[in-house]
Image 1 (cartoon, rainbow, N blue to C red):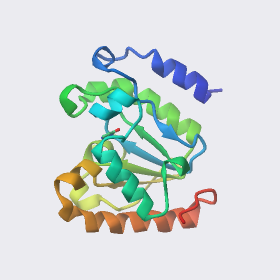
Image 2: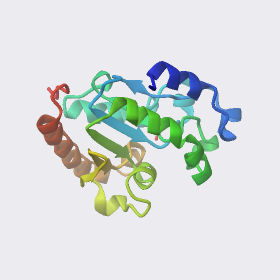
Image 3: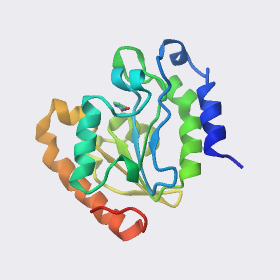
Image 4: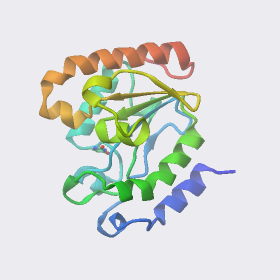
Length: 190
Ligand code: URA
């Protein structure tokens, strides 16, 4: 049977792709290890690489504000990335890097067994929900798979670049809060 300790140990020793050579820290994930809601980002940026925690840079500050809008914080959910090591110069993770890193996220999802999964941005949505995912058209929609509900919202970095997308994201977050209230008995949104 898998455990969080075994997974963290295996992941820390990962050399499945070249990103392990350029990283400062591996960014495993943060939050409740029995969270009912999982957020999945793309991969660590500069601050995340330096601090070893996901979403701690400017996009992370906005993510915290977004969570707060619906009464959530990091201690009530789990936050992970598809790729655990920073791609140089914040480029998108390559398909082979995503593939090499996929077993870690798969094991995190199996251990957590979340009811709701929220992909942050296009890259996570394409990797986790549908390779043809169109974030502009499909954000905020629920997809049922493996006994869970999956949704994608705009990545906080996209919202920093283009604040005009924020009202739509607020509606998506309200939809998420509604679903949490209906399905998640341990996740308080107040
Ligand atoms: N962007 C991501 O997708 N993940 C992080 O951890 C930080 C920024």
